[in-house]
Image (tube, rainbow, N blue to C red; front, side, top):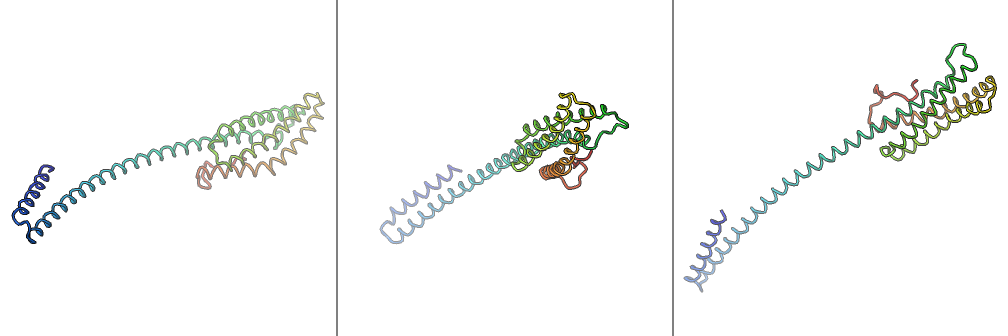
Length: 237
């Protein structure tokens, strides 16, 4: 096609020169020369436009392919982040539940029928140690997964975790101090009963609403519909 185009262009140029040589100086000759010149120029412009349109279509298709690849990569990355956030929320939620369970049992009181003073002290000491260990694991879980929580929710979780661990630690401290001072079991149980009442008040009036707020925030992050079966409340025993 390029050779044919060049040949036609050469023929056109030769015709112009031939006609110009024969009828040069006449008005008709100049008009013919001008007409043929315009035709050649129009032909060259049309060829350039066709070539430009072809290149533009090729580049447009290449851009569409590249944008499609980028969109897929972004979707994959976003899906990975969502999965990591979901896993982080599950870990923190599980750690919260691990703290709530022994703490709720302390608040509920000793379930042993006709338990002796020593049995009651041992029961509360075991639950208090469980709550304390769970509190330490909870702190680690929040620190390890803080990257995946939005700032406002992270601050809410940290505040709630701090209040929770402080409350269970205060109860455990009473038991450890009684043991360190070698108090009589009856005196120790009386101190533990008072500490348990303080813990129960904090647990019901302060901590339970905070934990429920965190559960609601986690549900929103996970985009889980209200009332789904996997939306367990933290305070379900």
